[in-house]
Image (cartoon, rainbow, N blue to C red; front, top):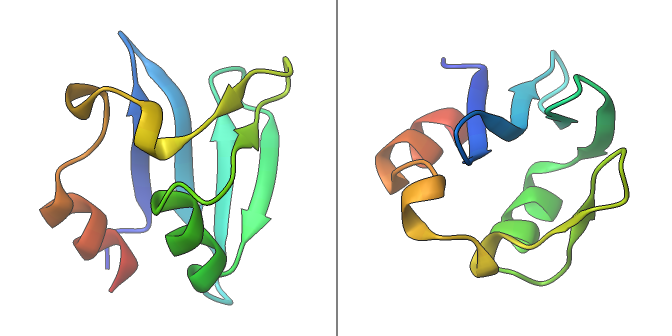
Length: 82
């Protein structure tokens, strides 16, 4: 299982995630601050663009609004979730 994934990368990781031991997704920002912890269904809702995640410097991130090249491939995303 791949337990770490760069979620949004604009010349460096803006948001990245780690799967913890209880199958939650822990999201960190570029300053290595913990942003939020999501269940897998909540994480999928964020990927669907249902809500924003706000980093430690109050910047909101919406998955659907990010450029395709700034996000991991669907293969990497699915591999991270399985």
